[in-house]
Image (tube, rainbow, N blue to C red; front, side, top):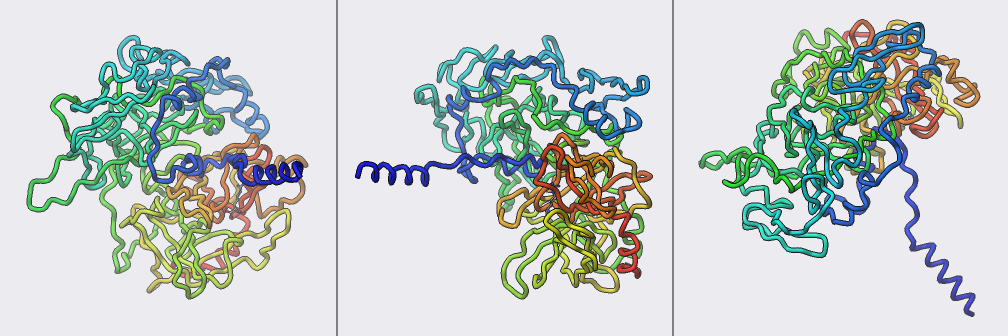
Length: 612
Ligand code: ARG
């Protein structure tokens, strides 16, 4: 009897003990959302003293800050690159110089150092700021610690709760063990009552200068001059068209044409960004327009309290998945402001889509690597293919990516097409969940899957399809700054070339997925290499090629299929591949496999012949 009870108990325990969450795939495309903490949904989390103590970034580590430089060298050897400086292995705009036959040297702009200019200034050594964020300053000692409250300046090693009072604007500090709560006077909010009653943004929040420093989900924003951001190869101060709102603070801003203010935040050792929990200003009702953020309180300057709302970091260890090297060329893109969104004109402009493969000059971070975000108009040929059951009233949902190659033609993967579905494409937008006036939504008239499309348990062959869009007089998509065509390739591109993949990577069942278009850079891998027994063996044919990193990490994944892999040929972007398949995502020796568009040029031309 007892045994029986015990067995029942064990059975119940197995049922109810939460199973270890599956290992997260490393699809960088999904990082932003997939890694959100479970159970938080849109509700706010509150960081407790314990969270600060547990935070892995503060854990003493035996790693010194000399990272594993062999990673890229090993990868490059594997991929048989010819010139060591092609693609540029130097990060942070370092200039590559060829050294001997197989070597290179990076000339790093200050303050970067390291073989690949991957290291920021040494002042922010791990541990220097105790439980606080190390931010860089321009005067000696060139750094400052922003403590995670209740840890106290100068080095955030000692803590004291409510003493002195961290709450601003007359807020009252209530101690709860080692935690605290600020009870704010009416109208004030934020963990330190530092957000005033008129703190709000107008339009897209480009002019917002308020004090909100938390993301929608309650993560503390990193300081814009945080060492952690630089260490992750993004430099806010040298990357945005309009960085005047940025400074040595952690307030949400919109320097790059996002729909609303946002900020960087950290989870563990990884850098993310998200929109902020800022209110939109009410529409003026005859009365004067409310200030755009603006100074809220007489006592508070433009900065957060010195011992107040900070995000910690001191561990200069970059994320486990290293970004692919950035190219300096991308950093030199012309700075042309992006105007207001262009609403597609109803009548066809005569000069539509005359050139292909030329994206909007970048306004945002020259490169947020590894799939963080795409700037408006940077991948204007990216399409979201959406489906719903035929003639149903259900909502369309994203199933695959696609590439606009003509006003009325989208290239996608064959396996994305399902019979008995209504299909539409959405383009000109980065976000699939926010209403965006620059988005164009167009019905798919019919889908043509390659006649020799074939799926086996090992691979997908001739995985290519064309979507004919609905339109009038040969005009379907309208060319705008956010909607442009990609060019078709002419000939082969050499192995080792750095190309770009992009996608929303949202799966059919993830209603709260990666809604923001993300991009990553991958290297073309030689067919011989990729056909080695440890990689994909003999399943590859000429209609496919591999791209990515053999050591794993950056890769396309579920939901990115059909989307573009573009490479630069004579300074224009050509769609060299279409996301097709792979053995899981981001796995070592299992890079992404792409349909080789250059193999299907005759097929594409024969189907799309005609003016549009
Ligand atoms: N088949 C996937 C899709 O339908 C794309 C998989 C790409 N996989 C990879 N490891 N690159 O979205």
